[in-house]
Amino acid sequence: MDYMTISEAATKWNLSNRRIQTLCSQGRIPGAERAGYCWLLPKDAEKPVDARIKSGKYIGYSEKYKKPGKKNATDGLEGKA
Image (cartoon, rainbow, N blue to C red; front, top):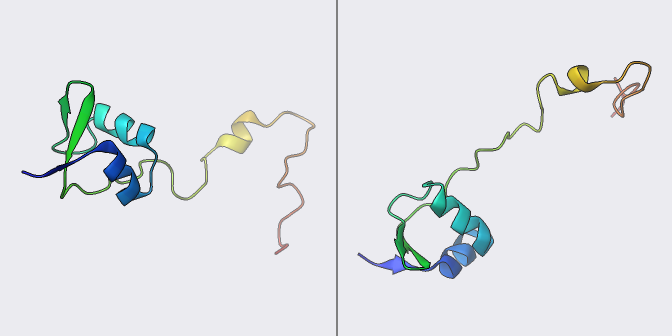
């Protein structure tokens, strides 16, 4: 099996070296193996899916943390483009 280094994967997937290391340690890259202080990733490994919220909406955030009497940045923007 052919392997690539963290640096090669970072360039290929447009991510930082540190992010690739984190993904490896979390087990989110199938087939990644630790060799001493280095990670070896299969050449055919796919970039893991981003698990963060894609919509940009944090459901219930504004109402839960809104301070009484204080305006939010979005107050009064209804209907404006």
